[in-house]
Length: 417
Image (cartoon, rainbow, N blue to C red; front, side, top):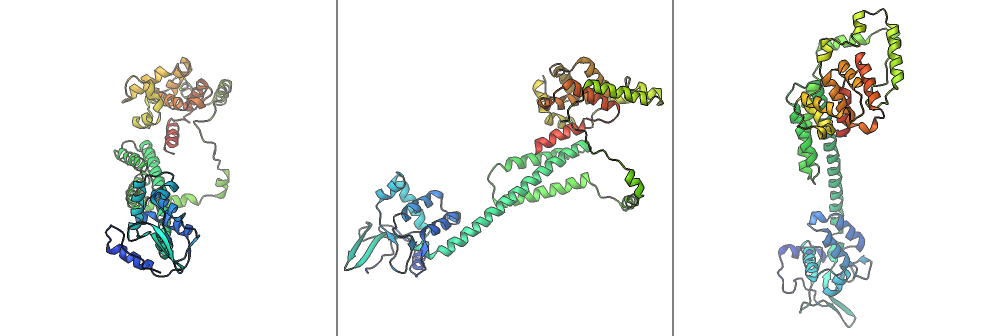
């Protein structure tokens, strides 16, 4: 066999390429060419190769008649022309094809075996075969390296996916706990900071982040969650712990008599018929004739405390949760009077009669009734009878069994999910 050149025709060569060519001269076991291609495709980022580079390499491998790359017999050198390669690449421009081939050579996947005049061809002389073109020996000699890099890339992608899921779940917890804190302790000024952090994290997760960026987000969200837990669940003293332990040691008979209503008040529950509500009210009035007359009169004439009490929710939480109300507002909802004026505007549009609305304002308070109406508007398509539903809620408010906070928090949780 004649001399096999190691320098390309009319091109410079560096020491790295010489080392890769020297390694390719060592005999290696036969390797399936498509297995080598799949391993390199999985590890292409480690060698700074693109998917188009792998496509060009796949076209070059198709010119090799054998299925395996066996360097122990003859070097797997292919000698297609540029035109034939471009035709197999579905008409890729020749300049683009040469650029991708240069990247494969720079990555040490291909070796140029150029002839004295730089052409690619094969010749036979007295039974010997000498081919000049692209040598595919590195695919066989570096197959183990490609497999190890592919496995490392798969593990990195799996770790990236797991960390992204963790950060997403932490962001959701941060948003939910912030809403809970706004409802329970609206006077604290820190809730807006945590809410902004949750929203900024949601925007950041839309991009393709690196592993280091996700780890920084995980640390930042972890610190914020710890601070939130300390605000919402402060540490208990030893005295409270001993009292709770004493309360647990109650009589079994008392535990057996305990009854807990598992049916929660749901905003999405269907309203009772008006006839049933009136009948239930008359039955309760008849059964409670021994109560003080002042308490019975408070059903129709609530006290000043009942009239003036407002919702235990910040206006900002109501406005950001009940977004449908803002479409009917003439001005931005920056105060409770703005909310009540808008509620008066949409009340007839929702089919709520004036007597039912006046009864709701008397039993709940004007501000509380406006919040309830905003929450009903947000889920208006799911309420079959808004008039009967509001009347039912008014009856529960008279008995002291209703507030608007669970309705708004349920809407907030649905948006954060």
